[in-house]
Length: 219
Image 1 (cartoon, rainbow, N blue to C red):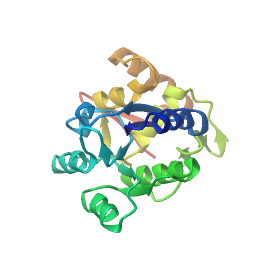
Image 2 (image 1 turned 90 degrees about the horizontal axis):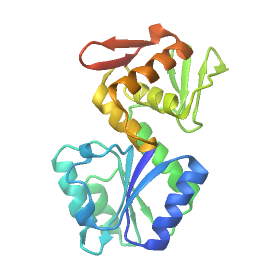
Image 3 (image 1 turned 90 degrees about the vertical axis):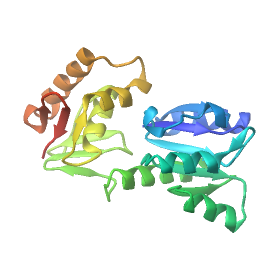
């Protein structure tokens, strides 16, 4: 999972990046100013955004409002030291999926991230099931007929992207953008190679190619 963190506190930003990587296996891009934030969330490949309300050059709430007016659907969790009820309500009313008060425990924040991403993916449970194929995003694992699948990091993230919206056709460009934060950018040939390798492990019939558009995971 890839996160976008917008937080000006140096110590907190550094500790969160390290904790996400070491404790949860997340990659995390960290920005410290409102002016560095993307104009639209569709421009970044983040699964979830962590947004501080009090930024040195602008309002986190203003960023959130702008994103939601553009119909951005990426989950956003507000992280704030403002404990007043009106501040928390302003975040939720402005389009935040959750509000977490500082200081917070990393395991709780990770659980909340998983929860909002799961809701965004329209998955009610920790395990996403497609017939005999089970995807476990939180455990970074996948099972086929009850047996663990030996997937690489790329293959697993690719499977998660295909499973995120059951029955949907996922565009090639979107998949490549989502996979890029793991390492170098993914070109068309590399993506096809990963698709081929994943098909060999989960069954070629489970990934349907929609010519000129992308791929679809089928049960």
